[in-house]
Image 1 (tube, rainbow, N blue to C red):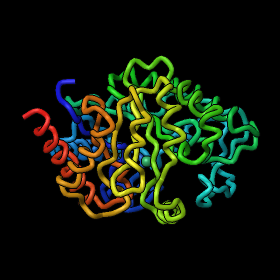
Image 2: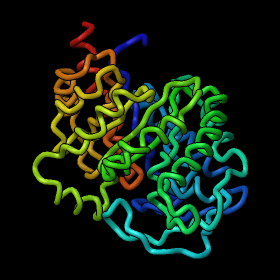
Image 3: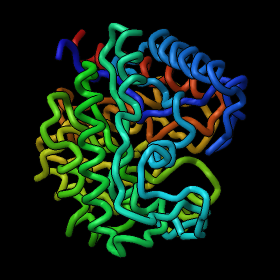
Length: 342
Ligand SMILES: [Zn+2]
């Protein structure tokens, strides 16, 4: 590490309005065929440009090539029926029509490897690539085959590991698994969730990360947050387990939330990607607000292990807000960096 407090983002950024409808999750593509393939790559170039010009140090493709962080991966697997759907409750929070697992799940070949190769070729900065985590994938399906969340998670972990090894071979610096389900199913996290995550990350030559959050700023999540009380202590259950795991980085929500910041001390020995930018509001933080969150985090984590980040993906936000937040994130980190290294 050449300098402290390197900035990064959880993963997604809003898409250009010519590619997909703005401010919408699962927004359908507005292009087709080769125009869509070209459009996705152009959108990746723009996402990189926005991050680079803002001053973000470890960049992503803004997840511009996928409609949704879980389903786009699932669509490429055998054993999952997207034609027939069932209504299930996602993370005990909201109902969604989801695909059905009808047989043994299996990969049909690389899903994002070409996208990762393209990303790697488009920037000289460090890059992070994101994948869904096994437990969160299980939670986005109706399982009519395994009848066991654990067995299905294990099958997904093996598929994810193959995909992640292919992505790592393109030269990305970090692979992150998104596991918002870790904030809900604490017994399962302990019993098999961490093991499945480690299986997905097995043998990766790059840095490994997990992102655990309170979700996008959509209504179902905001309503759920209202029920969590004045102190959100969910991380207290998972962080000690993650501290003992082989995963190297943990990305978490912090800005404008009710997470007691001292909980990050439970991640002893890990890199901590602290959310300094709220994704549930279009309000753009000031650099001073970002700096204050970083300083508060530094009371519990050494600056060598601290990476200022966003709380979660920014895909549902306006592009203007997302750009403003990227700039505030980088500017806030710079303020504190200068205090540390005058
Ligand atoms: Zn998130």
